[in-house]
Each structure stands twice: as C-alpha cells, then as structure tokens.
Image (tube, rainbow, N blue to C red; front, side, top):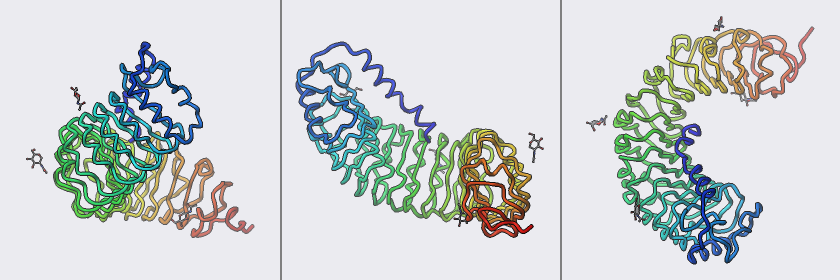
Amino acid sequence: MKRFLLSHLPSHFLLFFSLLTLVAAKCHVDDETGLLGFKSGITADPSGKLDLWKPGTDCCTWPVCRLSGYIYIENNKLSGHIPNNVGKMTQLDALSLEGNRFSGMIPSSISELTQLTQLKLGGNLLTGMVPDGIRQLKNLTFLSLERNLLSGTLPDFFSSFSNLRILSLSHNKFSGKIPESISTLAPKLGYLELGHNALTGKIPDFLGKFHALDTLDLSWNHFSGTVPKSFGNLTKIFNLDLSHNFLVDPFPEMNVKGIESLDLSYNGFHLGQIPKWVTSSPILYSLKLAKCGLKIKLDDWKPTQTYFYDYVDLSDNEISGSPVKLLNRTDYLVGFWASGNRLGFKLEGMRFVKTLKHLDLSRNLVVGKVPQAISGLEKANVSHNHLCGPLPATKFPATAFLGNDCLCGSPLPPCKM
Ligand SMILES: *[C@@H]1O[C@H](CO)[C@@H](O)[C@H](O)[C@H]1NC(C)=O
Ligand SMILES: *[C@@H]1O[C@H](CO)[C@@H](O)[C@H](O)[C@H]1NC(C)=O
Ligand SMILES: *[C@@H]1O[C@H](CO)[C@@H](O)[C@H](O)[C@H]1NC(C)=O
Ligand SMILES: *[C@@H]1O[C@H](CO)[C@@H](O)[C@H](O)[C@H]1NC(C)=O
C-alpha cells in the first residue's frame, strides 16, 4: 500500500513549492487570530517550530497566508487539543496535523473550513465521534483520520463529498455498518481504507460500483457473509485486503489485469486452488492467503511472474510438495511464511535469496539438515518438522528448532559424539 500512496501525494510537493515561492503578504487578521489560537492550545512543541508564530509577523513566514492556504505540521510530537480557533482560518485549502500527539475531540469548528480539499489528522490520539459538521467540507478530495482512537458509528454524511478520492479511517474504534451514503463516492473514490476497526455486517453490494477504486482495505473487522459478486466489476483494484474477518465462500471471480497486493487470510474461505486471476498477475508483490483452505501441491502452481514477489504467506493450508522451485524464481523475496502445511522437501536444497529476512516453515514435513544460510535471516522457524543433524550457529531461540527428529547443538542440547 505504501508504494501506491506515493502516487497519491503530490500535495507534499505542492506544500514545499508554495512555501518557497510565497511573496510577502500581510497576515489576514482572521488567520492571525486562528494561528495564535491554535498555538495557544498546544501544550508541548518539542521541535520549537511554532515559536515563529508571533503577532505582527508577516503571515507568510508562517505556513499560511492568503495566497496559499496550506498548513502541514506533520510528525512534530505536538500535544494538546486541536483548538476550536482552527475554524477561524476559513481560507485554508489543506490542513494536516498528521503524526503528532493531539488528543481530545476533533473540534466542531472544523466545519467552518469550507475551502478545505485535504484534511489529514491521522496518527494522533483523537477520541470521540467524527463531528457531523465535516459534512460542510464539500470540496474535500482527501480525508484521513486513520490511526486515532475515534469511536462510534461511521457518520452517514458521505453524499456531501462528490470529489472525494481518498478516504482513510483505518486503525480506530469505529463500529456498526458501512453507511449507505458511502455509495455516492462510487464514481471517483480511488482509495478506501476502513481496516482495523470493529465494523460489522455484510460487505455492501454497492462497493462493486466503485470503478475507480484501486485500493480497498477492510481487514481486521467483523464483516460476515460472502464477498459480493459485484466485486467482479472492480477492474482497477490492485490492492485488496479483506483479511481477518468472518467472510465465507464463494469468493467472486475477479476481472483484473493484475493484482499487486492481496490478503484474504484468516476468514472462512475454502478456495481449494489459488485463483487464476492471482496466478496470472504480472505485478503481484505481496500474496497472503493464510488459512484460505488451499489444497495444492506447490510444485504444480506456476505463477506467470515471480520476479516482484516480496511477501508470500500461505500458512495454515493443506499445501504439499516443495517451495524450492518457486523460491528459486524470486529475486527480491523478503518473507516466506508457510507454517502449518504438508510441505515435504530437503531444506538444504533450498536457495536463500539474498533479500530474504523472514522464513517460517514450522509444522510441516521438511527433512534434511538446517543449512548455514539460515543464520543470515532476521527471523526463522523450522520447528516441528523432520529435520536432523547439527545446527549451525544462529541467534534464534530453541522454539525455532523444537519438535524435529534429531536436531542438536545450541540452542538445543549438544550433539552426541
Ligand atoms: C469548491 O471549489 C470550487 C472550485 O473548484 C469553488 O468554486 C467553491 O466555492 C468551493 N466550495 C466551497 C464550499 O468552498
Ligand atoms: C457489473 O456491471 C454491469 C454494468 O454496470 C452490470 O450489468 C453487472 O451486473 C455487474 N456485474 C456484477 C457481478 O455485479
Ligand atoms: C535455480 O535456478 C537456477 C537458474 O536460474 C538453476 O541453475 C538452479 O538449478 C535452480 N535451482 C533449483 C534448486 O531449482
Ligand atoms: C515457531 O513456531 C512454533 C509453531 O508454529 C511456535 O510455537 C513458536 O513459538 C515459534 N518460534 C519462533 C521463535 O518463532
């Protein structure tokens, strides 16, 4: 998802551009009051950045003026409440307080900032409900409130935002269903993240109408029922995460040219095979299908492309055979997780790609010796297999090797001479 976000964030460049090209302009009295009020609400500013905000200073030495309405104060460890005066800066186009330590509620005065196209309050400690007044911000294209402690049901106000392209509400404590009004975002929304909340109910059919959607994250919620057939119409989707819900079969046939990142892990799926639209994807880099009821022989699975593979998680399925050929076809693999399957092969025959950091082959039928190459990994687990022989020196704990036939040497008991 990270890779993708970059393409969505020209705003950072805009910010720098606008700060550098500003000409001197007198601070509008509302902006001055707004900024000073804002500053007075801050209880800690370890970076000292806000010291610049003094009455009578040229407003454009502050990150706001009548010419350019951007306030980006990101990752500055600012704490305190977001002051209600924030509503005075009515000319603001974009407000980002992302990655600070703001607590308390989002002030209702935020509804006064009707020119806002971007509102980013993610990565703070904000609590309470989303103020209904946000519905006044009709020009929003980017709304992110993710990684806070917000709660209550999602407000049913999305019909206000006819230009919204990015909506991120993940990692909060939202409950209840996906509100009906989200359906009005269908023509333009490209990015929808609602993961890591406590949302319930079925995944609505109308999501299949989001033809511009390329990223959808509904993971770590309590969604139940089937994934709507209408998902077959999400032809642009290339990041899809539905993991850790209570979804059941049948999974719809997708019509995508390629999927970049897919996670369907830990639901009630019994896919049997890895779907064709996954196998044929030319751009896949992250594939996570843990506990998806896969019953395949891994040697028989022939993905079109493996070059970009970074992460593969096939844990807790009924996969037999050997991953050796698959892993030998990857160049950048970082993590391979396949614990809890029936993989049976000689471990010393496996090629360890230089990029590999995480390997979990625990609870399989792997035989042979543990190769020296394993010591170069950050995390490894080959416990509960049929391995034998002396262990190479590693930093891994005993639980990474327990439950094999005859492994010996540190951290397990010494080998008998
Ligand atoms: C939204 O933007 C348009 C221009 O794109 C502008 O004319 C309009 O006034 C803005 N609406 C609000 C509520 O600021
Ligand atoms: C996909 O969209 C078309 C046209 O909008 C519609 O007729 C069809 O029923 C949709 N398919 C699914 C599976 O919803
Ligand atoms: C891995 O691939 C190389 C060529 O790319 C080949 O020479 C080698 O035999 C393969 N190893 C295994 C174990 O398949
Ligand atoms: C290795 O895997 C086993 C079983 O899957 C687990 O119990 C153990 O904690 C793991 N150890 C490490 C170091 O990951």
